[in-house]
Length: 325
Image (cartoon, rainbow, N blue to C red; front, side):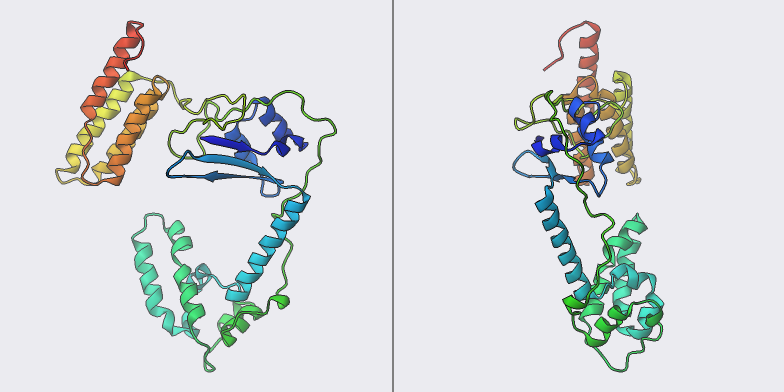
């Protein structure tokens, strides 16, 4: 992974920045303890044909003004177009909206059918109800609609948007103060003299991104590669145990128990974690098989070969030999 960290970050007088600078706080930890109001932000760029990049960007006073302006303009445009009505709002007050808009009945049934197929109902509700708002806002205004029930739920501006069928005037939209607006922190009186010693991840921490990635040539000087630090001590026997259990479950998945395929995925994840501290390459190989099992329904990995390779690693360690390449 390529790291891009704005050098302006070190000029901000904040104890978290101090800890990041000395390596007492990992990059992972720094990103996790950041608040919406901090004058910096982190972001990942995931690329298909190049290494991914983690960026820590600092806002100066001009940047903060432009950010606030863009954010406010985006909110104004959204409220103008929708009147502040969201798909989740329609779903949560289905009876009231159907009273005024019986045309939404079929769309609600479609959304319900999609949500019923999702395992996580909460996530599904938040992501799948958007078509309700799109359908509602596309309906032409009608003079005979009964808004009596909606008037107890919606603001006057939202009702105006529905009655007229037209976006609200931008200059008439009042914006509440942004509670998450980024604030400037005091700058240091004295610059940090020592070179920074960044640490990507510490023992016990989890990665911010899935997968095994490593600092690339663009990483800042002094980076300590601890990305592959295991969450637990390695155990060859446990690794082989989980691989063996995955073989059994994958076989059963072909004998009338299709759900057992997903149980095998859990054992493959355990196997990779059990070997990571000993051999990152081996952990990556197991992970690759797990991803193939998850993405290709008919794929059957050759896990006995992996068990043999783990045994070779085990024997090499007992004889104090270099790892088998």
